[in-house]
Length: 130
Image (cartoon, rainbow, N blue to C red; front, side):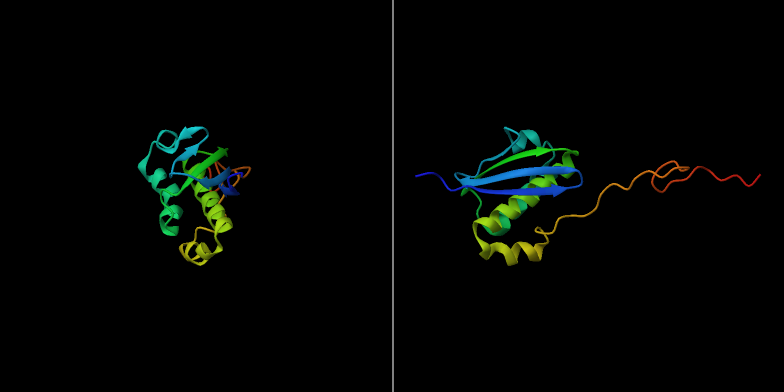
């Protein structure tokens, strides 16, 4: 009999994470590396553990994530979103608790494009009256 796996996609900024949740002993692997190695900052590791702790499934499932695009913060957010979706896919009883925490909502904030005649998206060149 094959093991049951739950797949989900998470997104944040320009990062996309494909997350697989399978029965195991709580190991989190990101791009074939342990999460502690892939995300060196404790805050990022904390971000990806949040949905697991709220659902109360710590140490019961192995999580494998393949994440691409963006930087460390966006990737951690994408993995978190993917884990949340996989947990809800696994057991819809967790949906209300995770929804209340705001983990199911895809963070819509993206980088604003640079405008012509300006230094950046909002910053302008110094104005000279004379």
